[in-house]
View 1 (cartoon, rainbow, N blue to C red):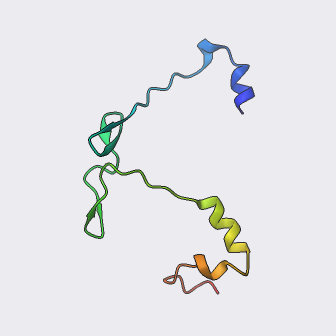
View 2: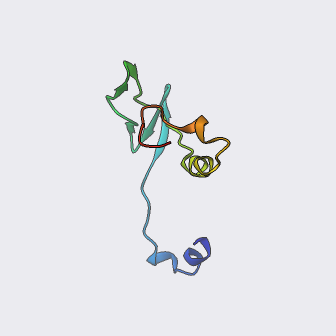
Amino acid sequence: MVLGLALVPQQARTARKTVVGIQGREFLVNGRPTYEGRSYDGTKVQGLLFNSRMVQGIFDDRNAETRSRWRDTADRSRG
């Protein structure tokens, strides 16, 4: 994919205008805090950056030895 972009003339590429920053203890995207005004389980999440390791979860689900470590206990549809 990167090589493909290298072959496109500079003027034909779409300019990106996303600006990421930090103000105090909050992360901002285009001048606004991430998850603006939101909370989870009574805890403010505005300005945080969440991390998700979805690919690793896919592999762990296929491993019978580790499957029980990652299963959502609320999900009764899986064994």
